[in-house]
Image (tube, rainbow over all chains, first blue to last red; front, top):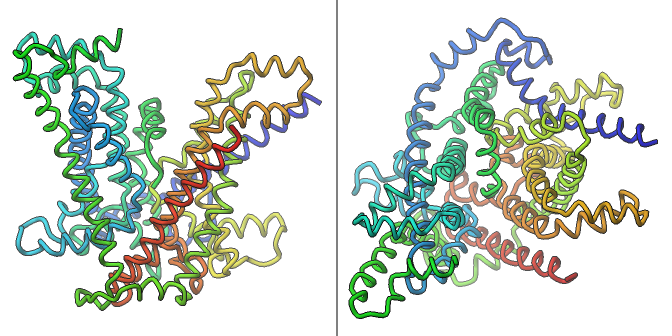
Length: 275
Length: 309
């Protein structure tokens, strides 16, 4: 009986694992097949990988999308980490009067649904279009700015700063470092793992972000990867092999980070919010 | 000990007059550290929220807006598309979130067994869907569930169906497709929260209950679930907030169709603002429905979870 139950558990977990992995296997296999084979349900690797890549990079704006997504994700990650960690550190280290009340108010912003602020944000950026160069609708800056400051990362860094030995701050002051000097030369180097976990999440959120870029980026030369995939997928006569190739390329960075730094990745994910 | 250190690093606790100067300066520095974040969140969250509230009382096309009192809010009740979007979103919420949480709990309990082999493989496999972007997996699911997609081919092969199902163009099946997709993407994510919480449960509780003759079901309902309650509450709140805002999947799997059978509130807001002739005022009104729902549902979940204690 016990043994039977054991076998049942293994069968159940194997099916669950197969269901979880299957779409990945399918997209990797389909990347090497031509469109017709993909629709006919071919599950064996083919020899069309090179053709699919050629179409994707020659006749679709894949290079532009990759460049845009990379620029946006890198700048977003840098600014998110900088602003988030400065604030998390500031809230934890200093006895600024009223800081906890401010902190709680900032946390409330995590409950704000993006759909509710999307229209005013769009109108705000529309308002500066034409007056401030590189900041209006359909600019990379507009795609980046509203996403870099989130209460989640302030919370994340404040939580992790609780583990930071505060004696080091005093030691830094005695050594004559400025307050910012302590932050950059003492705090930052000792908190590398926290920064790594935060960087993974910030990069992934930005790399995969869809709704805001969809709203604010309109011209083809500003397209990001999720926008490109969505457009390819919505076409009337989609080339499945090419779309699957684009999806694999889009998934590659996050999948690689996951397999290389699984622990940081999972830690970061657990601290991050859905949606 | 830690309190003493806290005090040492707290500038304005210094009592001598001499420290008042640098103390003030350090406080001021504390403000500088949080300044960017406070300004940013004010500018990109709270200010737009306020603007959306004002907008929700205005109506008109594009930027020709006029104050219209409660007209938009009254319109909600007689707008069939809004009612469809609200109903669909609630169906997703009431079916998908419980199914996912139960599945995730189940996986985590099975995987928490120390004697289980290939644990690392199973855990990684079930978590793997989390690495995909929402758009990418949505497009994949759209093809998997197409009329000549692999799901139909598989079901036909097993003779479970005699002809292909119209997964994406049948109102009920389309909802099932969306629910299956979200469950695939997020179950592993919830599972890791439960797995890490399970590691903190004292083993001796299980051993004691075994001696008392408790079955594994009893152990699950009387030890595991109560011990995991805070984390179940946490994950159900994030899932609720996430599901109320669902957009990417709907847009890319069904585009809201057939008819409005899978339309979500967020997608309706998007359509009102950017697909139809722009009606920003009414769209803002619809968006405040999500805000109100998030607040109410979070309060209910806290209340329900708090009652038993």
